[in-house]
Image 1 (tube, one colour):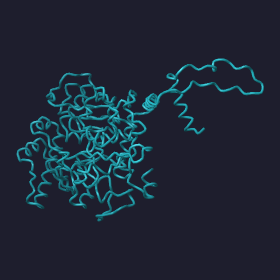
Image 2 (cartoon, rainbow, N blue to C red):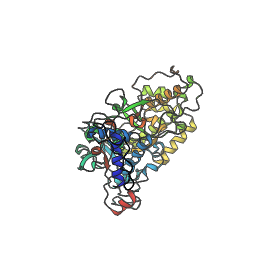
Image 3 (spheres, rainbow, N blue to C red):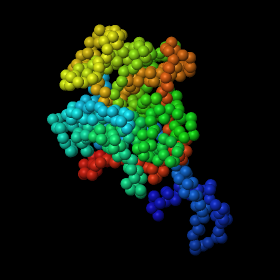
Image 4 (tube, rainbow, N blue to C red):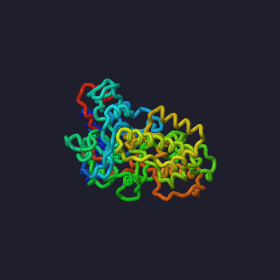
Length: 479
């Protein structure tokens, strides 16, 4: 009997001892003494579990072996596969303040998904703005290069609203194949390149980890189910269908594999560090406010797929401008945005994009010292940095940079973590949020409480398609 068969038999017997039909007879009485015949092995109870019982018991066994680190490992696998680069997930976080948003794309409204889909208009620029893919200098088209498994230089990826990948069963014995390089036809008709949105990325990570996000067994892994599992759906953890539980945003509690989600976006925690929210320097609860949070000191790294960096509502922005780091980030974003508008109008006088109005520009600038303003202006000019509206796509980013893009939910999360540090629920001097706050949620499998319905069955297990069939794929990508 092979070791695999033996293990399977052992698991079945272990799982089914409590549900076997009838009682066993014989193994409790000693056999008569024998001088020439070895003693017979004990008779095990008959295996009479139903297939459903076996699947539930197997799921319970598997659930014990899940952890946040296993979910994080699945996120690295998805990222490396998406970029066809086994080192993609090991690169330092993408920094918008140093790199800007991706260039070489334009956007068009998708009338079916109601979102904005990007498409390449300048291939060289789109190649140059790639962070996770190294395209040969001066090359516009290449099928393969020595530093990547299957170069995506011909179709450089970006953020795509409604990007989910495609789920299909090509071989029932192997389960479901996830093709990260294709999307719905109505999306592919605009975006000829790969791309995912934030919820599509998160769904693919949990599917790859062998986990379901909903207990409804009719919702097997498909692009349609992924499309109907937006960021806001993870906010609701108190329903019988949810496979998640809320955890407090404390340094000692938040862990890799957790989700930070709010109404319009979702992040997967990749690294936590000593000061995830930039609050360790705060010594008393009453100082837990906008002004004292230090986003530049936050050590949390998150994986997400980020679209264009929109500016906060002006009224909201005024509250947050007391935070110097936030004000500096907004000022740089304004400069990068205005630079892009100037560039586009120089190329096309019909371009309808508008620059940030002068009053708002000056109001933000007035919050900063002349030295900081000069440094930011030099950085934008020297680095050719722009906010193009395309975003950065699938990436790992610092929590502090995300706070500039989502100040309301993320500053509020940091403030709540700060108050919790002092066991204080009392409000600080900062205004209370008039919005749905962000939550930190964790899959039940990572806390050892996952029911069968939260674990993918064998027929639902995901196999990532690498779109590779070359020798390089086998030797390089499968490391």
